Image: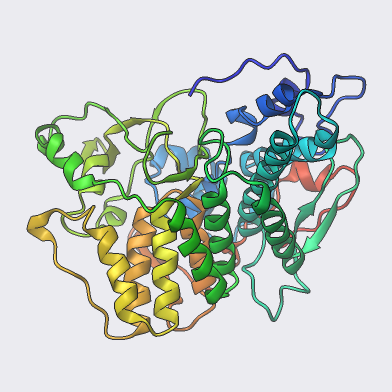
Length: 467
């Protein structure tokens, strides 16, 4: 998608904002956008608004392959990848600032629109209200990523006491910020989305503008994280009412079979998971939006967790050895909706909620509806479940694979680690030794970067994790 070249002084400042002044976004004396065209252009800036990488969440879960060379070079990567609990990650955390600053840059643009949008010129009331509603949804999705990356999981017993992330509603230099509780940030996200819904269009202006389907999908995600299954189910079904399409990966596999099955052909194919992917509600980049790229490589052990006959997996990765490393290399290039909102997530949220409520057959019907577009006919058979626990485990296996490299698998690990039936200890062998990541490990909370804690703007930030 082509970027707009904004003739506004704010945009380059947003993108190149100093790590030492994460709240100092809007320069004094610079031009405030005034017209609808000015404000709407800000929301099309993919690098500033629609990109939130989550590198350490992916690395901690071992959802990507990291070479020994990179582990030697990036100490923080090594700590998280190999689950070295004794190490103090805060010392090395300036190598992981992207999640924090990208998310707050997106929030700052949304705040700017919401602060000054009521006075925008050359706009109808409907255009103004829709743009401001869009900004509220975008702000909420950024806060969801921040809250699940840097704080403990939502637990009603502790959410009112444990701290989450800094909350700010202004883009002005010197605007106050407050590190609120987990309960407060979740309440704030829900309020933002509910306030936005009446003014959102059915379909956004572009795939970068969330519509009603995206808003309900985000509410479903948030409610699921809170273990509020009735509201999560209601909103997932509302989202699917706006878009319930699934991409047929079995047909894609058939059309590209010769290249996919050639073990020596690593020519990159253009990914269908781009801006026009039929499963999209809202598109958000995980890595840089400025150039096309391959997907992250996978460990051999991680690839083994995909179901036999998974055409979506086989279309995206292929086993490769580049001495001394063997891994599954990406065979696609393009832009990927790793941090946005999609129909497959809505289906699998609905499936879990049905299982939680005892509707096992309905849950598995939804799982199988997704699988029929993924699993090749020769390997396909309907999945069944004996009980809710069995169903949720099968839903999770599919969900972890479908949404790999998004914030969702990491958030789901943290959520389900609170339940004995689903808590999982990750295990692997490193240099001949068995290492583990327990469900209660402090590594599941990422420390704030030093640039934020040492220069917090007009507020204060307390680390949510000791090391």
